[in-house]
Image: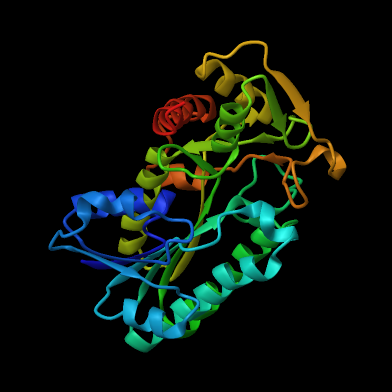
Length: 320
């Protein structure tokens, strides 16, 4: 099995590479290292079954070179920073939508017929049904990031049905854990490292969301891919998340406790309408994962356990 992992030096991508290599696959990674880090792949550099290509998939020739002799693609390359959408929408579009189009075109040219795409819970926007199932409508993302992921889903669906590419869409909740270099836990730790007496919390702290540990995320990706690969369906969509949620201010409490700090003053920004952390921040999110569970996958850790484990992992890595 020869697979391409786009964004494979990043947080989720590098963990996926670890498991694919352990399966004995031949793995090629393409990453421009704008968000990813080569050190995440250090143990595979020089391995006979591993190839790293530093390249930007916004360039069609890079996508074409990356797809040669490939059987399946795990597409994780994207700009992961939801918050920058209101300042740099073009950057989100290019790194998410343009990259996905170039990848699909290269797959079409080289006859690569299998794709797994890491989408996002943000495609649902502020869903009126909680937990939110895959067939919820209308899909009304409120962020440029969510809109870009939905655009990618639409492109993939079109290519899947027109060119008979088996395509699996995974709408991920908030993924946390080792190697993460963005997100609420990472931000809180860095802020407290700079000032252990005061913690700025974006929004009102009452944002309520689901969190999934990276170990459960990778297990879900591979389990659902294996099942989908054996089925006749050409295109399918699954939610991947946990079955509970946490408040942002509860996560702040856990980080403060994990760092052994006391008497930390919380300062809430409250600048964005509705108590959101930034324009486009979905205040409440919980995915319905019954469809994934029907295929035999369920998370081992709930949101609280995932956050606790991620806090320990990130504190250790950031040498607080």
